[in-house]
Amino acid sequence: MSKTVLTIDDSRTMREMLNYALVEAGYKVLQAVDGVEGLEVLQAKGDEIDVVITDINMPRMDGFGVIEGVRADPNHRATPILVLTTESDAAKKERARSAGATGWIVKPFSPVKLVEAVRRVAA
Image (tube, helix red, strand yellow):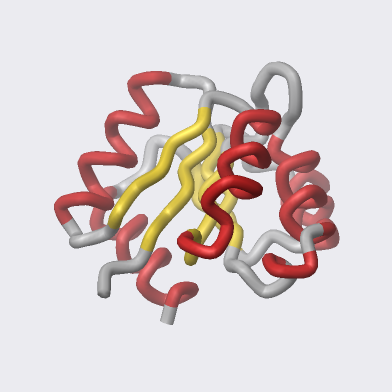
């Protein structure tokens, strides 16, 4: 059975790029436009979701809020969370790691490296 990835990004172009790369690699993709919607999708489809990919800078709820929200859900304490962002600041990386992020990928991303990272954390 194929694994499901929840992608959370306010950029429609970025969501489309993620969807294309992940579907091509055999993943099912669920999408959300910001952190609030992302946590709503997680609540509704949580038992299907194997990996979460989130941006940091988004309206309504940023990626740090997403990470904290996912980790607060007892069913998703161990769900891998990859941060995909233009941010490369060490303090933000540490904040994400402390909140429970599994990995950090800087945009623009290589589809091959993204899929490798998803495979690694979803294994």
